Image (cartoon, rainbow, N blue to C red):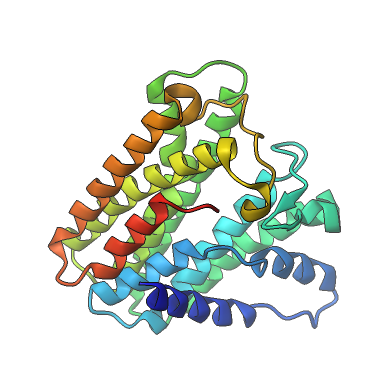
Length: 286
């Protein structure tokens, strides 16, 4: 699993390195975009896109524009999430946050540019037009007002009060889960997969995304800031799963959701990589 994971991650890393040029009057904008986009990270989402593409009989190389698109949207969301008007964070992935280096205005514009560039990436994929159109539909749905952005709004509103269990799930399914779902579905779309495969990918993503967020909540309480590359304890006043259930109950929930994710892969012939990936995320430290 580790070898395959590294292969997927290296492939998207090499692709992202070539996405933008600094040879333009707006050089600082490109620098700011690249600063956050190439700052490392697990590359989980584009890895999922490539893996599901291959699982459905497609060529992972052809899915790279889709994987790059999802990573650009994810990176833009992190840049904006770190801004003083939102979480006001100083570090991301072990480096000063974008606005600390380039200023708030350039950071906002770098996020805007990455979001726009994501859809340019979808459009340049060398795939049948109907697959590209479907990819645009899925990514815009998962990233926009009904998905990640909507989740961000709910998350900020929730800081003012104590949320119900249902509301905490609503926030997670949009803020974190939606982009993971998009990543998995884009892989199936790139390969020309069928509806059964897309539903299975979505179900896998729903459970994986929930387990991933609960683990994030735990790491904010017991994690190592150096390993995480960002401050811990910043969510102590937020409506998190740990605040709702406690650490031990959350660990049980992670295991249960991971098993549900693995079960969703039963429609595929050789899901070993995605199975092992799901289990590996249960014990992650960053």
